[in-house]
Image (cartoon, rainbow, N blue to C red; front, side, top):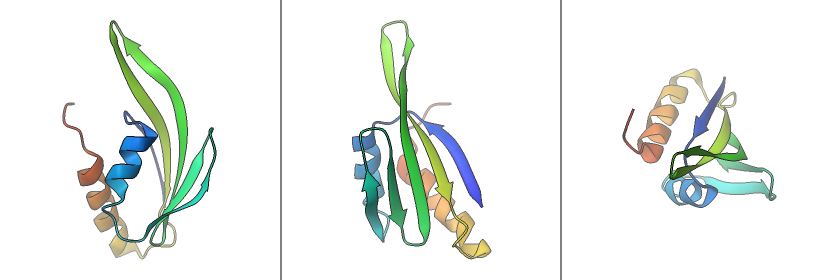
Length: 91
């Protein structure tokens, strides 16, 4: 199962939030992309250009979660924990 999303977080913010998930470790990191592992899940993150709305500038990341190695019953639990950790509020 592959889940793709766009997040309004910096890489530094995302890393800080993901440290709360057990098994978090970096596999590869470059300026243009990184791949992290959380247990059996793999995350591939690519920075996107910031989104500008008037005077507001928001960082953006393209995130691809590969949950294929997780048992089907564990996928929903993982996504629930992931979303709780990265949720910022708003709409």
